[in-house]
Image (cartoon, rainbow, N blue to C red; front, side, top):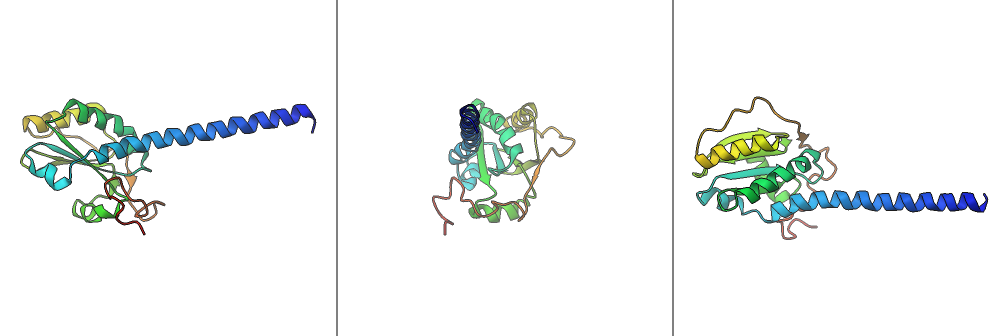
Length: 179
């Protein structure tokens, strides 16, 4: 191998390393958005009992659909600050196992819509477009029936086959569940 080939191989190795760092960094930014929303969430019982409409989203860091919906959820939180509670529960956090069973979460994202009285008004499973989520929230804020969503969106299944299932500790666990 001559000097030119060595230089080319070195340049390609540097480019590959830089691309790997960029991909890792971009993926970590995505999960920080979901985790930031989860960390800012009220406890579920408090949100359901404070007289405000509430959205509860069951999500996972590995769920691409959840990441696709994160900007819309962030927008809802910012747009309806003070009038709407948003609670995110990570399905990989063992602290939420009881809620996963109670609310029969079988695919994610699962979003539960609660009225100001704390009663469940509707459920959405899978990808929802920002305008659909906004229509659901607008109905909750008016205390009107939710608009009918005709079909389930794209989901990620919640199964034991997911590699991180019950192994990750979510953002509101405060270190509980760590062995």
